[in-house]
Length: 232
Image 1 (tube, rainbow, N blue to C red):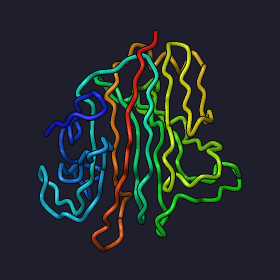
Image 2: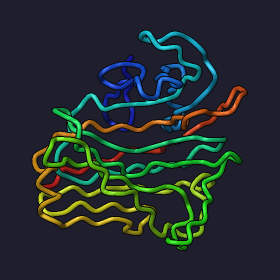
Image 3: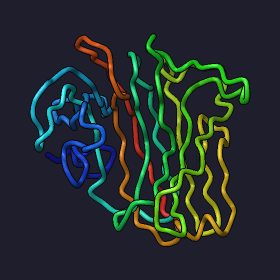
Image 4: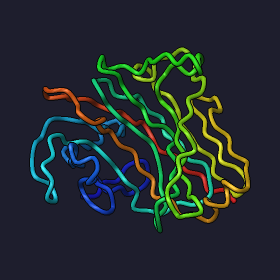
């Protein structure tokens, strides 16, 4: 199923299917994707046990993946993160040709209590558990995570306020910004060469971490807009 939102066409599943074999407790459920009368995209979660592509999956989750391919430029969404135990919302992109590379503008992780507040003594100002992740390629061709990073996003709870999350991808720079603050900047040529010329598949999704609790587990990830500006 395809939808139109924010000026682009989107699939309501990954381009390769409706369930990930390593995360089969969830499936991409078109019933969890809707656009309201004000143009806001809602990516929901709910209990919906069924067999999907040979896997027994307990929960339906909302996901949209771009039909269009994107290149160098500026990407941004404005959104309010969902609340509920063990959620895993994300705004990310990966190559149309291979994996890696992958850029996770953010991945949010709620606690069992349903919030994003998580104190980290090694990063006392990054208390919202909404890190970025970058996946690149090793010499052996395997995916390598450059380590999750959480930066200072301010005092506003990202599940109670609409905030902007963006990434600027250029030949000589990748810069990720959360709520107007730079949380990650990559200028290393050895890293950037793995991203050069990539055509990106953009994905926005709600999801559950492994072993979500019992219950209906309804949640609503509200995204006001997606914005892209081509840059060279």
